[in-house]
Image (tube, rainbow, N blue to C red; front, side):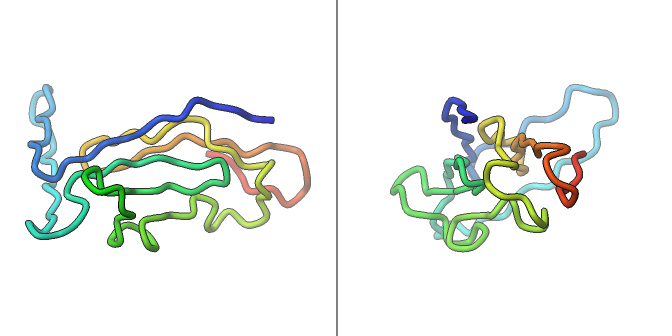
Amino acid sequence: VWQRCRGLGYFDADAALPVPSVANPSPIAAVTVAQDANCRRRLFTNTIDGRLIAVDADTGAFCQGFGSNGQVDLKAGLGAAPDPFYQLTSPPLVAGTTVVVGGRVADNVQTDMPGGV
């Protein structure tokens, strides 16, 4: 059984994005979240069954504007990847306005397994 520690990613629409400390950095596009929108501050977590979930950091409610009712199926588009053959390996990391998660696909288990990157 694959086990991992739980972790959270955090996003605050009102916080300034960091400026890269390299010469001639590419501009970072600011995210636009309406002032009256829910989920201006978000917590992200992922689940053992391959979902990424966003909840409002102030209320705990699912972020309706994120994925489908606050959830994204990270196995979408993988084809035949039963739960034991696809696992998330890290908590979500929020990098600016992008959420990054690590995952793995079991190789050589069956002939129609999705490829890795």
